[in-house]
Length: 176
Image (cartoon, rainbow, N blue to C red):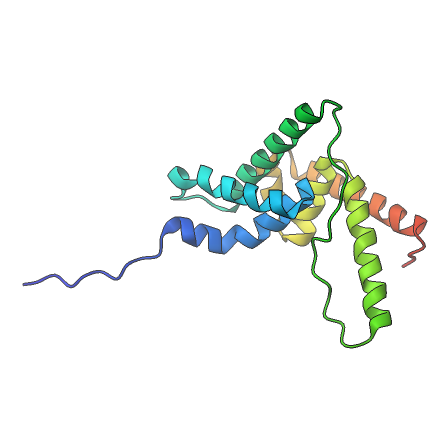
């Protein structure tokens, strides 16, 4: 009796990248604020996970990405010698599809830039809590596990991030 060849199963690393790649890239962009560096760090993240792919979940992927980004930022601080992290914020979010009304598009683009600017001013721990919760939709308990803190700490960090973002937007003339 001849064996029927098995269909080639999808590579676990490819599956992991397909499941989490886009979200991790957005997260890395929020941390390093440079799209090119974020793409490089995304590759580094998944390269570090090659031997640990089996059973790797979202928490491990994001923790690895965070560690890659923080290592990069530390190296950058040392190279610059002044202890500052680059403040250049890039337009990481694509322009919203708002139809053909340029005034609406311009208002949305201005708000998007204001929010990105506000996010760039947040401390890393608050920016991370906000991004993972609001943008990636990860539950507090999972973020807490990722960062090694309690879910209450994540809630507090997010609360402070939202408060600071609101203050930033009010200073720029955006009222809700």
